[in-house]
Image (cartoon, rainbow, N blue to C red):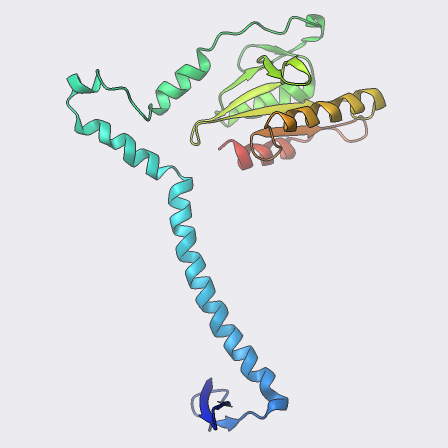
Length: 231
């Protein structure tokens, strides 16, 4: 416990370890005791304020604000709902719009597409199968090798184009499967640089996983990325 007083406009400090003790003056050479007590009080106040802020942030992250806006639609009669140009489409409408997008599949090296995924498509490697299987297990909507144009590289076909339904956000997933090959690795690094030049940043709207013969892709790595950006 700490008590402060003022003498000749200078602060003086007294402390005691428990309520039953007598107050003890703190000279300057023992002022660190006062600092530790005040630090403890200050950190407790900061923690209390931070916890309050986190509750507000959690509400925003979970999308409650969007849900509140979507609730406005229910205040209209069904006839009026059919006429309105909705600002916030429903999750079902967003999902159907994503899944109904038609695109031409990447027809190069079709002979390498040897692994059938739970979604019914064929992919080119065991690691891509692992990613597709884990995405399906987490109920993450995705499209395989959806075409994407990048300035500086042209038309590319990312391994997976995923939808974070809660955030209404598209996430691109590129898997670099032969990083032990110098030529492949050099091209892969340049490709990621071009992604960044086009506004795709790792950890925001781009996932990049890598492996080599010595360091294969692990399911734990896939799940960490899904937990971080897709659920």
